[in-house]
Amino acid sequence: MQELEALASRFKFSLDTLSELERIYGEHVAEVVQSLKSPGRHYYFRVNTLKATVDCVVKRFEERNLRVHVHPLIEEALYFEVEKSQSVERFEKKVVVDKFTAESVLQGAHVYAPGIVKCQGLRIGNKVSIVDDQGQTVGAGIARMNESSILALRRGLAIEVTFPLYRIPSLRETSEYEQGLVYPQSLPAILTSRILSPQAGETIVDFTCSPGGKLSHIGQLTKGRARIIGVDRNETKISSARETIRRMGCNEVALITHDARYLDVDFPGLVADRCLVDPPCSALGVKPKTYEYTSREEIEALATYQRQFLKAASKMLRPGGILVYSVCTVTLSECEGNVKFAVDECGLEVEAQDLMLGSAGIDTLLREGKLTQRFHPHLHDSGYFIAKFRKKG
Image (cartoon, rainbow, N blue to C red):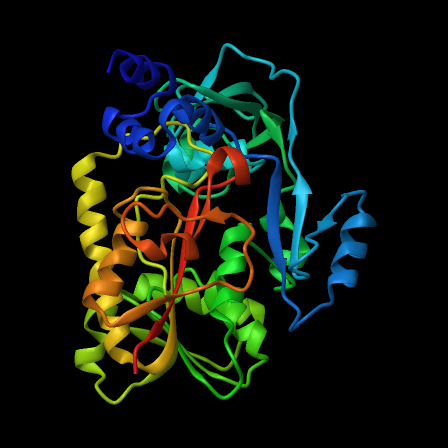
């Protein structure tokens, strides 16, 4: 316990989070947490082949002296190599940003006004250190707005990051992103849609579709020849998904504002050939993290919540249909524990996955555990879990 307490103080992680990680990684827990504090070696994004070829996108970036690499097994998956800065200049004046913004800055993003928590006495042109709300430096830059404008407008570019801790091209600020030619997405997330393997002529339901990354990838893979339905629980989330599929040109996708946990009850005539269940999770595999204070109670509550989506999807799925479950976390209860629930309670059988880019899952909870796929933060640049099922029939 003393070792975990020391790690908690050093890395600003809760004891509950560290205990969950220790259950999986044992003596390697410090290495895992250290890995979670950085963006990793590669920054992945997906080429939208509905609008552009991979060669075309590669050429466009290379013309701007941006070196891009193509994944050897997934042709639409491209990545930039992440460069760590040798040093970051520190300034007397500081701007405090929220956790989401701090983690974005670590990935090369600039600071926009809504992400600023405190900027006392800030003037245009000031050189500032950027710190999170725990006092950790995440970068430095130049103020493009003053304090009064930031507080009054709450929008616009506030700090241009000129000294990042890590150097990654800001993909969302490129014309390729605006035109829908690319979409920033982790390699495991790209892989998830490939494992779902959607086919033309099928009915495919994405149970928690916002912000639309996997949903638009499904549209891309089926080339507009499938019935694709994206569901999420409120209009804000659906609007986000709608904007993504508009930008990506996936015009065949239908969107439903609904709590997908009750989709089988409220839409009894809807039968799916394939379901994607990618529900809200503890996100303990997402990198980089400036800090993490998730509690054990929150993790267990999320695992229970995720099971409701699995139950509803299994009821909607036709006999012999395919369900893919994915979460960007590594806890046993949200990963193998929920696979056990799906097998024991939902009439599903675990299937082998056609493409294994991570490691086999942990088989302590069920004998089919090794048919699942895990990505470990310190080995694969992110923490992620994928399981594939077939409905008994």
